Image (cartoon, rainbow, N blue to C red; front, side, top):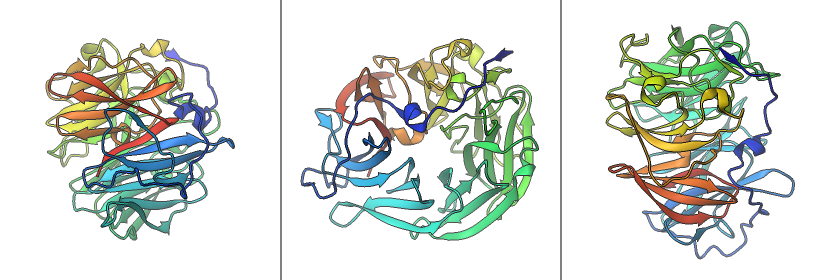
Length: 409
């Protein structure tokens, strides 16, 4: 067992700093004639830190991300605060923010300009994640250390109005302290939510001997049970929301890493990926993707499902007992095969720091390529990863503190 001293949570801004660049905020009144308006645009949500220390996010469309430089100066939709972005279909959904607990949509108008929709439904706490359901709705979840309930919402993807809300007692998930959310998927007649236990004051993770996933019914959203597996530790980690992913068959994969670099003060079990077979409410005891066996003990807190059992992962290249706490580094992209249980690292991408957030938002999967923004020294560059030969090409420089989202509209 490896145990680390308890440490307070770093400021959100320092955890998310993908670059040492510093910008003043942009203005909506500046000329935006250079913003691309085509229907095949890349869209990046760029974060800038103002002189007051707060971050403003600008979502901007670009025609080309592989040459020149990318900036939000004078362009884009601006949003103040700590936002999380999810693209579902042809719309980007924004949750979080500062001072509000709404869900906001970004989409193109008839002229190819981005505009905001929604913002009507307000929640008691910020939604921790929004995912697409198999019947075409959105599913949002509220979990807060300050609340004694877990709240699930079914949301209309067009109007962003709430059609159903169900609350369940936090005590169903934990009798120790409030659960820290780490992932959610809906598959068949169930919703699966992964979590870990973190002290709300010290952020110490003193319970790392079991993997736990909460199961709710769908579409009724009623609590069903907790499923556990003692072969590995808790599922997911701080801020990444990739504790759970789902394949085309409805199988759910659960990632356990207990990385000090992603919010854990100790680790006591092997890092691995578990599986819940489609329609089941127990872990498959015949499936175990061991990082000790496949990746020589290197682990990941970041997953992006690509299809056909393949997953893009940002592998932490430091052993767990050598990781710097809360660092989300040093990372290198790789493709995992969940069926063959193999790993292929991507060439020509330097080891880098992450930004402690959802890879499915910060990386764009587009056909045979994945686009990612990689911090290098005091700059950030787009890298295009070829999923067929596991190579990469360096692209445009990004003028921002960090990139919160990478999309195509």
